[in-house]
Length: 92
Ligand code: HEC
Image 1 (cartoon, rainbow, N blue to C red):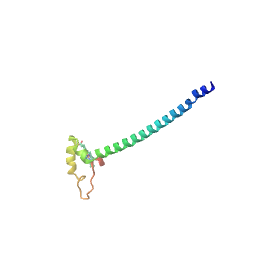
Image 2: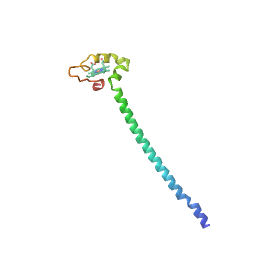
Image 3: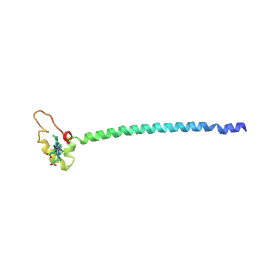
């Protein structure tokens, strides 16, 4: 009888230890996934903002902005003696 009880009781601590280990692994994987998603989101946002701030995007992508881009290329903000150029994103 005593031997039988030992057999029944033995697997329990083993199982809980294994369950805790799996939970720890799951938490680590979730943390790693969140960090990866965060880095990916910041990188994508930064790339998107940089791309949409270019004169080419601002001045040619939307039809309604072509006149603004046209006048801009004739203005001193685009072409001047000192060679400094203010882009759409610098002012807007
Ligand atoms: C040197 C700064 C500067 C740059 C560079 C610049 N803008 Fe502007 N923009 C302004 C200012 C100031 C106004 C408001 C005064 C005005 O309407 O003239 C304005 C107004 C506008 C308006 C509204 C005009 C209206 O009559 O309602 C549009 C559209 C515009 N800009 C688009 C652009 C685009 C597209 C570019 C790039 C190709 C650009 N701007 C580059 C300063 C700038």
